[in-house]
Length: 590
Image (cartoon, rainbow, N blue to C red; front, side, top):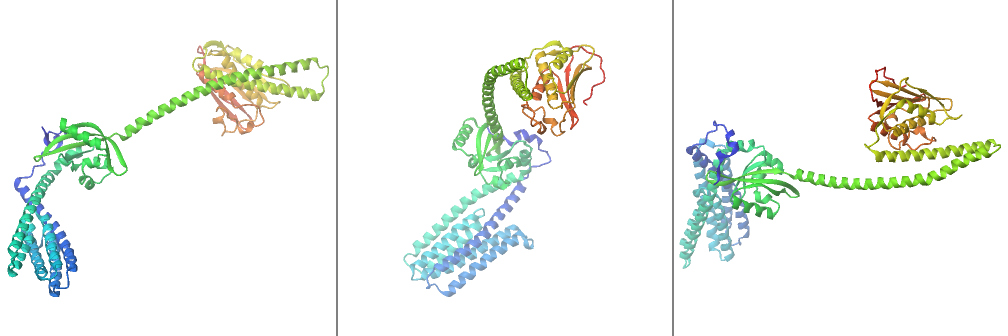
């Protein structure tokens, strides 16, 4: 059973102050709408008849009298102007005349037009050129059949055919031949066919008009229902899927203007034939459609993936459908993008893991292949240094250069291997309590010295400070900081390593009096492989500070850097203590 409009979910929101129009009011509106339609068509037919008359006249032979031609041209042009003038007067309600008076005037003009055409027919009937008669009959026939467009009111539709039928019959009577009775019968049979056709078209047009009037009369109700619906929706005819009402959300979704949407049909904007067949079958079988996936194509090149629903309605005795549409194009595209992104991420992750694994194997091989010759070189240098009785300054300088180069290569390999080990360890590093004070002291002792190295000073807290973590990794981090400070500090400079407690943290500061770091470079110094422009000519691979930061962060700490260009840099490491120590003043970066 089709649902009543009042049973719709949104109907409850319709205020009672919107009364339904009375039957008398509907009759008045119907008459006015019919007259409006008549005059709309009447003005268009007047212009069309004038053009058709001129074309017919140009096709006639010279046997048609000039006076007849002048009479015909002046008549159709005058009557076409009268049609237009009457239309304008009707629009302005001239003289306060009733609308029905204008319709009878329009019928009179149509009747007069038929008389003018009959005058032309009389001369074509008497012409010796048979073509003239054919042209005359053709003109009257075309003009008569166009008048049926006013079939919504029969007097206006039949005025012209009636005038021409009477006029043609009069011509047959005044020019009697044996064929005149048959021609007269044919004329009135044609008139009867035109009348039947006008009546049929008029009834259909009147029914359409009546429905639209009733819908228009209740437009405020229906529009309120449609606009109250947060989902794009419309009311369509069930028999042909043409749109009657549509809310602004549906028009915006389809990218159509309101008049474009109302002049279209649902089945015409369903892109795929299989979708149309599926909708009609489901509607026939279940009497409704719920969330059916359909591709709509309101314009060429525009496609929307939607979920479409159809609910049966009955409006003014005619079966309708409530249409609701939900756009799922973006949802589908998002799902596809998510799947594609996931597959791409999985592929990239697999590739990265493979690359990391290959890199680890390569580093292990490089470490093995390089360590052996470097050990041989270092051992040989020691042997030469011990066995040589005397060395010239040139040889001593060469030995020192070889030793420094060897030590640099060893440190580079150790740094790369430490970076690789750190990647393998991740969050599973060894966490054991150890004495940070003794570890810092050990780092200072193990730091490289010599006549060309800056002086290193250690300022340690008097009480041992204990932290939890991987002792070997923390040692690597602190050794890297000290080594880094030594590399960028001149021989007569100083590196200071200070260890103090602050609250629940152990604070390690490594300060140097070296060249310093520009403020613009400070945010990037912990980036992997990054080296400041001032580091050119100084050994390094840009991994040390990056490695330090990763180790400290893995232990729940943080590292900060401060620097003054030309005066030196200070790196501050903060690590959580195992047990609380009374807070002192927080050490500041120099």
